Image: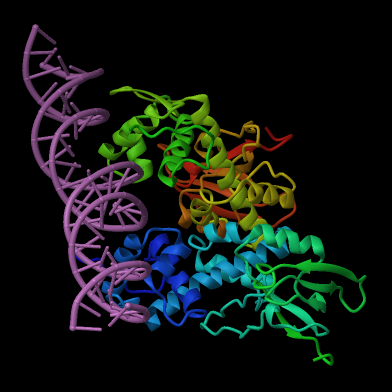
Length: 238
Length: 238
DNA sequence: ATACAATTTTAGGTATGACTAATTCTCGAA
DNA sequence: TTCGAGAATTAGTCATACCTAAAATTGTAT
């Protein structure tokens, strides 16, 4: 008896949803999603990934395509489910931040658990209360119900030169400690950064933090921070 | 290797939490909580209950006491955990109703899933937003963080005589269809009911629905409804 | 006292989803 | 072209939590 899966979500286990979500997230940044890459991000052993991948490829309809030793690709069905889970995750993050006063370093862990259990009704009500938000508290786009996703900046702070002025548009959500640290420095979404100095060889970057109107503040950011902060050039300052 | 459990919640599986919660709920209404009673309420087979009960009795410290063919009793630890789960459940129900506009027939199913995954921080924030509510949307008491529970009426509508005037204080949450039906009749918490007629042999009860100020309305309720509605005598009308 | 009916427990099996250990595959370098 | 390192897969285990079927226990009624 191979287990068969048909409709988007509601039928998948939590583990299966996590795999699909992670695959979609990794597809965006890696040209090939490999077993070991998945294993790292899901914090399981590669052998476990192989097993689950084979199951998801066997499902009917298949959630992903898979050839031994190659890598995985989501099918439209798999992608649809993954988008649904990511929508849940980011909507919940935004709700926790907006409606319940969560700090941006805490929302990810909570959303990780809630994303798998909320009903479509709750999803809809949360979205409605928030006015159908397009971004989560880290600047990641919230997929719409039909699966469309707003494009976001892929320009990391590592790519910015001294003298340039940028606005923070996205910060990776995977390191709560960094998020707390950045918040303490006043670095949040839409914060304006003026790059003061760039040490060579990807050394620390010194910048001035402050919106047009707020106080200025100088801080140094090492790689690890600059890698995880994405920006856009400030209008009229390009 | 017997698995051992120490601290309240966070360490228990969803299934274990459901067992403890159900045992506590049943202890309130049945003098003895038996395998088959649990099996019925948890919608599993009696053999499965035996297995889980034995595991919970073996945990260290034990969540419950158990003697073959007798019945189960929660230990203080088990009771503490059960109260925590019930607190989660009812807080979430109240939050869904108050903050997100859920109807009272939908909150139970959603809370059933959420109760097992929310963090203590989320529990606290929800309670704070609601102003530490004492009752859920069905009139069930929400245990406080220290485990105290407000007493509620145990007077079912079946015990009320013609001519008496009562206020609805609690309705069982286990039948969404009944809840929708009652809502349609205007029967909600605090609604005033004036009993018009009692058919003998637990036949249908006819009553007038309406708060002091609202329009009156006559309806008949069968057993199954009257069994599930709990009331208090209206002040000054006893 | 005993026997039956209902309840409960034991024994054995399934599915999920992780693990380790051992094997196999792929691909780049010599 | 062959070799070896690293990546991936297979094979075999384990724990959870359910199931069915068979055996055992309880209490009640004769």
